[in-house]
Image (cartoon, rainbow, N blue to C red; front, side):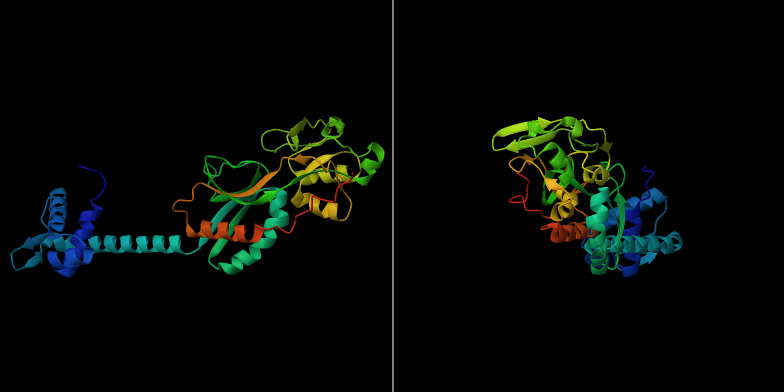
Length: 310
């Protein structure tokens, strides 16, 4: 005998008792009378006692059935309520969404978007985890993550929101001292600063048509957050590769200059990543659609033509 209670048999028993008829209960449950009869027979065998006295014209509870009915009915009502709650939660955005976001990107570009998100969905809460380290979405219990990468994790469901370009930059003081490189090989690797969490490796991969060039940063500073590179960069002491959502404001006001205009560094995209898109809760789907809407054409865009030092 299974150790799991016969929930189906108890539910059938409660419904038949409520309807006072196998036939009426079968109509409401959209089941056949023989199916209900087999369910009750299985329950009675398991319990070792009859729950109904049944004749061709009359159905009556036994004393044993009468004593069992209240609890069976409560189980049935609890199950109905649990299913209704689950359906409601899966159909409308409510509850908490745990989402992991890179530190600087989250503070600068995601946090300012949250007021409108929370206003749009009053029953939604957001647990925002800020870290440049790549989290294990499933293992760490996250509903989703925003990731900036060349390729999304193939084991997860990823939705590309927009392109994220990467710029090789230096301060005007650096260019005055060392000159503007015209080819990646002109870069001094000991002046190039590294980002510890860059996907793949620390290598900077440049492309110009079919030509490729790789530079391995060997500077005296390596960080786990790209924003920490800015003081050394602005002091004119180094070169770095920055994503445009950090670089744009400094390029705009001239505090940093884009180098190597004819060479593009491999960038990537901004992805909304979740364990799966199949049967994804409405709360996660709502957040995914919102970010696709507001980040599809981001305000941090920097023109790649006519803005570089040549």
